[in-house]
Amino acid sequence: MTTPQPITDATREAVDRIWAGMRSLVLSDDRRGEVSEALGMSFIRSKALRRLVGGPLTMRELTERLSTDKPYTTLVVDDLERRGLVVRSVHPDDRRSRVVTITEEGAAAAARAEEILARPPEAMRSLAPEELEALDRMVGKLAEAARTAEGTQGAGAARASGAGQRPGTG
Amino acid sequence: MTTPQPITDATREAVDRIWAGMRSLVLSDDRRGEVSEALGMSFIRSKALRRLVGGPLTMRELTERLSTDKPYTTLVVDDLERRGLVVRSVHPDDRRSRVVTITEEGAAAAARAEEILARPPEAMRSLAPEELEALDRMVGKLAEAARTAEGTQGAGAARASGAGQRPGTG
DNA sequence: TGTAACCGTTGTAGTTGTAGAAGGAAGTGT
DNA sequence: ACACTTCCTTCTACAACTACAACGGTTACA
Image: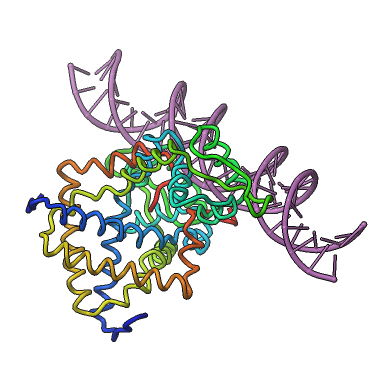
């Protein structure tokens, strides 16, 4: 959106190829099973934990970020609370709401999950420092563009995840 | 592997940042729900269809590519066969095996799924043609490196690729 | 004050996928 | 002929998740 480009066939082909490559790279490197095994909980629970490291959330907010529904969020948080990884408290300004806060132990678990998920694949070591630098810049631009697009009408991703039926990705 | 690079802090940081960016880009753009809705079937069924466009597979091979187990593959193929999207036949050289072949209708459905999944996000239009060209080259190198690594010691990715979120311990 | 709306919870039901045991059919090796 | 294995299927059980309805407590508003 920031700089609309002329669309040539070559450009379109490059875009398609790049996207296919990125998708293949990321999707073939799925570590959700490893995370579930390491933490001893279903992936969505570790996802909830990771969403909470940024700060406390209400059940409603957590529900949105998990792309699930309220009853299931209750279930997940119940389990997490039983394990001592989060605590529930009443919202100071709205007593209808509960605020879910991660505990120290929960944060440690989330960090363990994040460490597994964020570990770059070996393949990235095959790029030279200059190449990495350039790649870094461009991925940064893409991320930036995606972030701003999300605000305007980003629907695409958000909508699809809401209507989705299969277990969420991550 | 091809060209081991000196690991500096800056390099490591760039690698981490690139990987995080790519992951975020791909994972926040999940269209599985859209595919399920468009084809009227669970995502794993469309995945089976997409695996079959490259050519017929035995149940065993399909099971591996789907990262599931044999009984469930039977179930999925049963359903796909009932819909007329695949056909089962006896393997010419080993009558124990069944060969699953995609039908014309099945191939059309797979193409519809692929079209949805492969559609690049709008954000990519914010890159200039030269940037795309460079990005294309580097993603290509990464894909190449990943492909060769898979042969040598891969396992990791393939094994975990199934959304296997079994807690095991509950 | 009354009422509508919202938040989280409980309950219930159904779908999807995971897992293991067992069995028939067919191939392999002795 | 015999045991052994592989391939697929059936059956059963269960875990994980989705979906909907309804309820009590709380807040916002006319």
